Length: 75
Figure 1 (cartoon, rainbow, N blue to C red):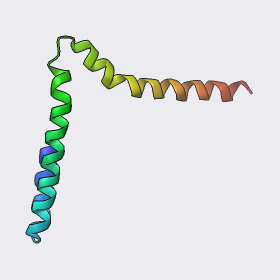
Figure 2 (spheres, rainbow, N blue to C red; figure 1 turned 45 degrees about the vertical axis):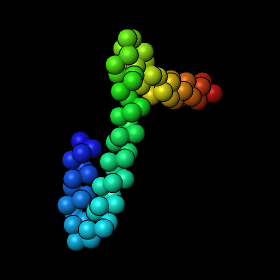
Figure 3 (cartoon, rainbow, N blue to C red; figure 1 turned 120 degrees about the vertical axis):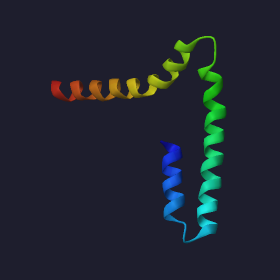
């Protein structure tokens, strides 16, 4: 999906070739850095640890919101 959005942005900005090349270079660098961060986790021996890192923060934030809502209903 990211590659499709980069292709769309590059196509829309085809009137300004220097800007489309700049966006393409920045997005390509971002994808390389993202892959360098994710690939070691994805191919580690414990796949469960990878998913735990991904789902920890959304779950933690959901628990904070639910806890704050229950505190507001008491008083």
